[in-house]
Amino acid sequence: MQRLKQLFMPRDLTQGSPAKGILLFAIPLLIGNFAQQLYNAVDAIVVGQYISDAALGAVGLTGPILNLMLVLFMGISTGASIVVSQYFGAKNRLELSRAVGSTLSLTFWSGLIITVVGMSITKPLLVLLGTPAEMLDMAVDYLVIIFLGFTACAFYNILGGILRGLGDSVSPLLYLLLAAGLNIGLDIISVTALGMKTDGVALATIISQGVSAILCYRKLRSMTHILDVNKSTLHLDKPSAKRIISLGLPSGVAQMIFSISSVLVQSLTNTLGPNVVTAATAVMRVDGFTMLPNFTFTIAATTFTGQNVGARRMDRVRQGVRATLLIGLSTATVLTLCILFFGGALLRVFTQTTEIVELGLSMMRMLAVGYIAFCCTQVLMGVMRGAGETLRPMWISLITTVGIRMPVAYLWAYLTRSPQHPNGDPICLYGSLLVAWLLGCLITIGVYRHGTWRRHSLTGAEGDSSAPEILIPEGGF
Image (cartoon, rainbow, N blue to C red; front, side, top):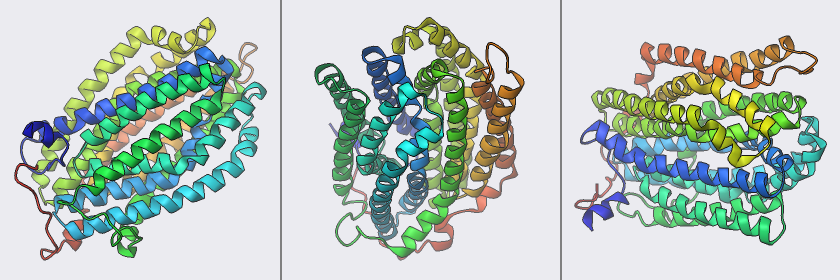
């Protein structure tokens, strides 16, 4: 019972074996990310199998627009993750509580702004991007409902990130599994029983994530031995908010430019025809599973580095980098092989149209090697962000997305125009991504080895030995 209880408590990654600590932290996170992708995939399966290929494409093409609206939250989430993990590692209860309170306040106000802006630009933006006529109304219905519940979705992601920054990756996993089950059930009921279309899938998403957000908040409130989440801390503390924004701003800017470039690439995708849009949507759903190690071990690297930088244990940071790379790259390799061998069968889960399946399979094969390179990039970026260095990862992201991926995609499309593909060969969409991933990996390794990221730390400059300590119950960590 005591061991089971410890699973749900924050994990101190500044002690014990780095590899074991990272693995125990990452396994629930990996399962949670898998569950997240599973219910995203179920959304697509329900839409593709029970509504139409056009509906599947409509849901898929909304992704870049949603990512563009998520820019504010990406910045808040990155900044909060760094601040929370470093203050937790430094055992600075007061600053940790202020940081969490400020994060929640920033999330609330940002959510309201995004809801208003998102609903007002949805249809004009979709029209501007040349959305196929048969997909337009379904895409609008989906986005409007998602934006209505955007704050609930944002709170789940932010609160889950805070819990993981505190070393608790199990509780967010359980809440995510609950959300996944609820989402799947509501998907099926809304589409098959109530006769709804993409609007039903969107409604299922915001309800399930809203429930998870409430559970995450209750868990955070219960951690009274670590921090205070109450009326005295749930407000915008200017120094804490400034730290979060200054650290998160580079990631937010990078995400904004990345999202704008994704919107432009989506515009290119739309010109290649409805089948290409649908194939790209199916590939993105399968691709999400292959990307799991990348995002999982990025968060693990950020949290591990943040806690150990806060505790001034740079020796453990180096050990953690080696361990995270070994585990992450091994997992990415296995998943990539699975995708190569079983990719066709996976795509047929979403659609039975042979032309779409064959096109999707060619796209996935193009990306195979890139998954492993991208994993290396993400882990090293996670280490740099955990140390408080967010500018260099921002510049790397900008170079790879704007300077490499987007120009290569459009040039490739232009050079491969033919009677069969008047607007270019669809493979340009993923060939350009592979080029960007490989070059991005080389650039990231060079920046990491240069080592300037090691000089960044909140607690190194601001740590106060007189700050109230976090009370750690016996056996709690």
